Length: 195
Image 1: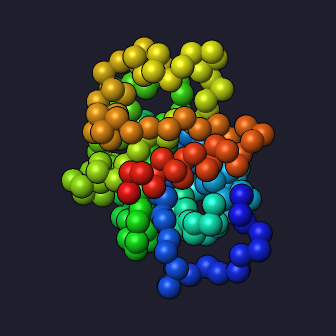
Image 2: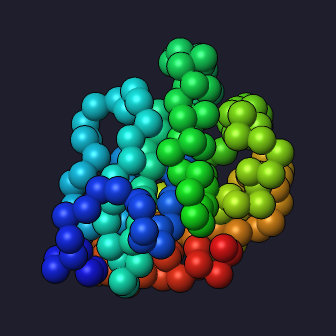
């Protein structure tokens, strides 16, 4: 990663920036994914994200703004109005230049209730949000030999519907890989094609 040798600059004026907004329910690995993308521990892990936070980094010569958001709950375990407010803030914090919403979904069971929560919370960002959204599957090690297409098929209609809304754009991500550079570089290339 090209994180070293770049100016310690936290603004976005005068520099072409690609914003990646991490969205999803609680405990799906958004914060850890943000740190993996940026190549350092910039977001605080081990605590619940309560406010939207934006951090900057460089990947392959490209300036990134990664926005971490509080997760929503399928079972009403968080303050839904606060999450809605923070999602709106994430939209404002990332509204400059090119941006992509990364809907973080772990490779585990995806219920119809989760599908409904995704639709409800994503709708806060407007009807055009799906044009700029890609599913980012986390915990790829849980595939255990299956490929992602098998997992999607086995998961059924709720997950398939979400993928259709994203125009079937997705990427599989592991925060445990030792070769972080290749994985993040491929993610950025995929996002750039989307933009």
